[in-house]
Image (cartoon, rainbow, N blue to C red):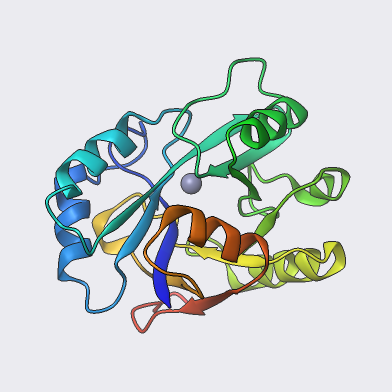
Length: 201
Ligand SMILES: [Zn+2]
C-alpha cells in the first residue's frame, strides 16, 4: 500500500508559494506519505523540477499531473506530463488525457472553479471527495456526486502553502509504480483519509 497526496501546487503555480525543493524535503521528512502528484495550474514545469530533485531518493514517487482551468471548471489530469492544447473544453482535456494514458479527476467539484453537477456529463475517472481547501459540507456533496456517478473518490490537500501539505491523503492499494497507482485509483482501490494535522475539519 502506498500513501499519496494527489493534489499539490508548487510555486510554478502563480498562487502557490511552495518551492519544489521544500516539497521534496517535506516528502522525505514525512513518516508515511511517500508519493505526491504535482498538479500546478496549467503547467507541468513544477512537476519536472520536483521530479529532478527527487530523483536521488528511490523511495519517493512524484506523480505527473496538471490542473487544467477548463471553460467549465478545474480538471486534474493524473499521469500526464504535458499541458493539453487549447481550447480547454472538458471534452478536449479528457480526450488528451486518454491519449496519454492518464486519469481525469473533477477537482473540488462544488467549490469555486469546480465543475459542479456538470461533472455528471463527462466520463470522469474519479472525483476529489476530500479537498484540503474545501469546507466539510462541500466535500460531502462531492462524495455524494462520486457515489451517484459510481466513480472512485480521492483526496488532495490542494496545498498552496507549505503548512497546507498533507492535510488529507490517499491509501492506494498499489506498489511504488506509476501505472500500478493509476490503475488502482481507476479501479477504486483507494481510500481518501484525513490526516492528524487536518485541523480545519
Ligand atoms: Zn488546485
